[in-house]
Amino acid sequence: MTIHKEGYTTIALSILFIFILNAIIDYNFENLAWLRWLTYIVSLALFLIVLQFFRNPKRSFTAGEQLIICPADGKVVVIEETEEGEYFKDRRLQVSIFMSPVNVHINRNPISGMVKFFKYHPGKYLAAWNPKSSTENERTTVVVEHKNGTPVLFRQIAGALARRIVWYVKEGDLVEQGKEFGFIKFGSRVDIFLPLGTKVNLQLNQVVKGGITVLAELA
Image 1 (tube, rainbow, N blue to C red):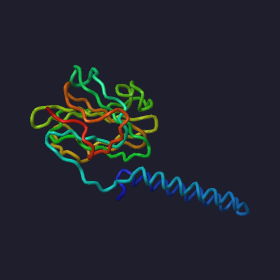
Image 2: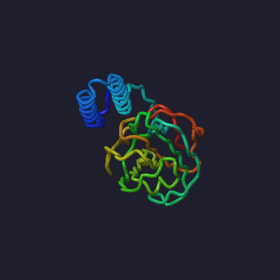
Image 3: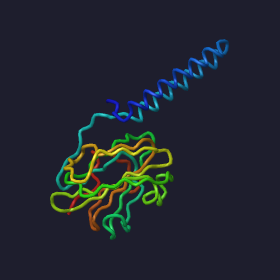
Image 4: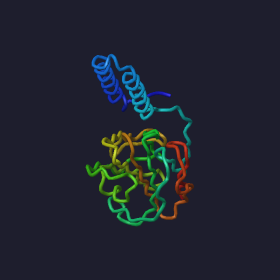
């Protein structure tokens, strides 16, 4: 397992904060051994939490031209037909994956193809499971067109804790299934919009892994 590049700055700042905090406690409360040990324990726990959040575990990814792979780790919270009003402006099948702070937060391309559309939207920080978060929160929208002509839309959505969305794609890029297209710091959500009639292989509340779990199959 390695640490993702998006974590370097946060980890460095965490180490600096922990060092300063422990130095202050050691200097001002030299005679309170219990307080110093409590600070050491809390500091270690904080460091491990930050470290695990930015982990980048080694994985053997699933691949298949007709497969749509889950773009993120997390739990399936939505499988429903809905109106997609930004790009398609018609009815689509929506699948949403909620990413808790303990999940790996790397986002991966569900299919290979060309990026036909990309847009970043500043916005609110509603809880990621709130239905309005899909249209009101800070988010990105990416549409990748498969070589058979089928477009798949996926959307990074910031949550109540997530304050930074990172993306690595732009319109015109050729992307490869399973490769990173972005990262969301702390709790968040990814929505995928598919053509109606797409065979979805997931169930509500199922726990999935990005780049591994097969989400659906293209017609």
